[in-house]
Image 1 (cartoon, rainbow, N blue to C red):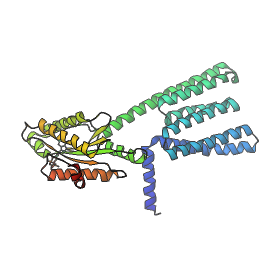
Image 2: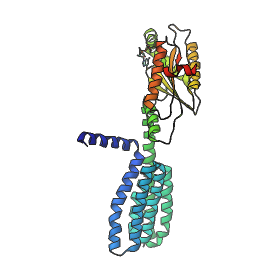
Image 3: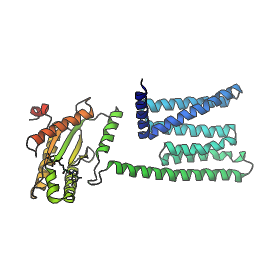
Image 4: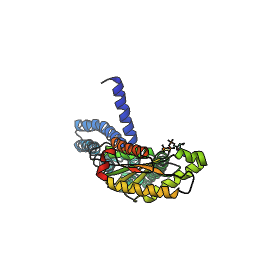
Length: 343
Ligand SMILES: Nc1nc2c(ncn2[C@@H]2O[C@H](COP(=O)(O)OP(=O)(O)OP(=O)(O)O)[C@@H](O)[C@H]2O)c(=O)[nH]1
């Protein structure tokens, strides 16, 4: 393998890890724990501390199982919950068995839970850990010392909770800004790519449906006649018309380009997509028929074929749209090869 292709593979891996933060956290936490705890298991076995050696080995093996679960099944949320419950329980058990000197491990454990889980899950698991530690009161010489420990642990949890909530809020805002088209309020091309990519990565999700590409006809003339602001208002109105025609949980619309929209219709045949496109074509033409120049739209439809790649599918719809433009605009076209089957 050349240095260049190695670099490409490495940067591809980094991209996947960046996009799948939770999976990255599971991999990092499991790997660090395995590397850090395995030597203790060996050292304890060598010094005949059998109980602790068995516990350490159990933790290492548990981490390996969780790592494999996350990587093989892709069920990262489940793996994160199991991982968090596993090392928190192991931490609390060790404190009870070994002595309260290990109690300081509960601090990083509490924070790690907020890294890999949503705040409410992490908070609940940490609260259970705190309750499980309360029987330790008699291990401390002064109850004030134990009380201080509980208060500091609670404070760490509150700060981590606030930090986690704020980070999640910022992440959602960024996600919104990056994926929503500010003019029309519908998803942009990046959101469409994310949707298509998750469908490809998650092999269990089988898409069955159709796509419609909508392109406004001679839109440049609208801009030239009425100005860009009016052009923007027309785009918003078209987006509203399309949005109003969608089935709430079955269809999605994206702004695919400047004056181009893409509709994903789940569980829809080519004939169904053509029907939707035809009614949209009539509604758009009717809405703008009074203005000069009037506005119409052209449509290209394609049904997804089993095992067809996303690129190929959308390319077929694009070719159908090209045919619609070529046949005089203000019309709906299926892919050329399927035209007669739909007539
Ligand atoms: N107002 C406004 N205009 C936009 C926006 N994005 C793209 N456009 C305009 O859309 C027009 C697209 O022009 P063309 O690609 O020539 O297409 P057309 O005039 O619609 O002609 P056909 O597609 O061939 O029917 C250009 O004038 C762009 O400036 C936008 O966000 N707002």
